[in-house]
Length: 257
Ligand code: HXC
Image (cartoon, rainbow, N blue to C red; front, side, top):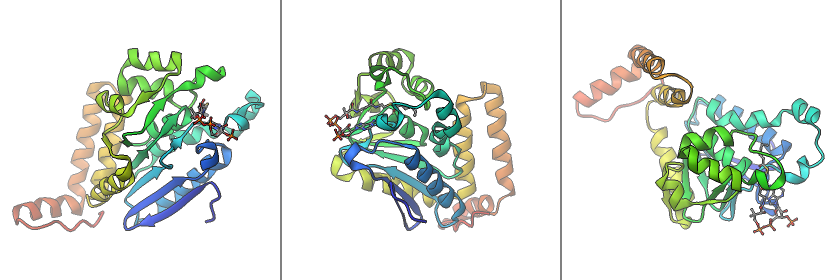
């Protein structure tokens, strides 16, 4: 499928999506979000793809929703286009999605990264929700995901002032899994994706689902949700294979069944 605003490739078992509007720091408009949705659909349907990495370029992961494209929009147009719903797509993917962030991840860019399962940041990464400076608020998850990731006080400060957070603090506060040198941030993200891709796929899918439920369920229900998924895995061939291989001291061969 031809894409104009993103570059979509497959490397081994990893699906790669590069945001590709460098002149506007990968600002996200309706066309980018539509193409992103198509790429996610394509990867979800392709059994050869086990993990996805989304990235921008060294200067910017994405500086947010395209301000030029939004500036004259009416509420009804926003509602009818409902392009903001696409931001939640990485979370809704069965397969894990890693955001490899270098440079700016602002506004909708920060929200897109936070909708992914893991963020790997280069040491030049900067995160922020500067919407307040253009007369709006975060609209694609920022007010919900940022406090959950870094705590209410610091998230509130960032959202009310629009100030950015640097990579080292983002790591300290748990927004990103790891900060790595800018020269290798993409390779590190790909290496992590390859490692995840080498694990049993159904267990990976369930693990992602269960961890994400932490934001939605009270503890008792979350524990039950986890337990039922754990039990269900005993119906898979990969559970037998994993445990037998461990006891036979050999490498497991996953079937995804
Ligand atoms: C459209 C953008 C853009 C954006 C940058 N550009 N961010 N265009 N939408 N979000 C464009 C600039 O207009 C400029 O175009 C070019 O990219 C380079 O940007 P500069 O500002 O010249 O670069 P620099 O001085 O290095 O500053 C970088 C920056 C700044 C700090 C990231 O661009 C900035 O503040 N951008 C806006 C960040 C922001 O407010 N994001 C939130 C958007 S609202 P020209 O043509 O002049 O070269 C949002 C809401 C999401 O995301 C809610 C769900 C939809």
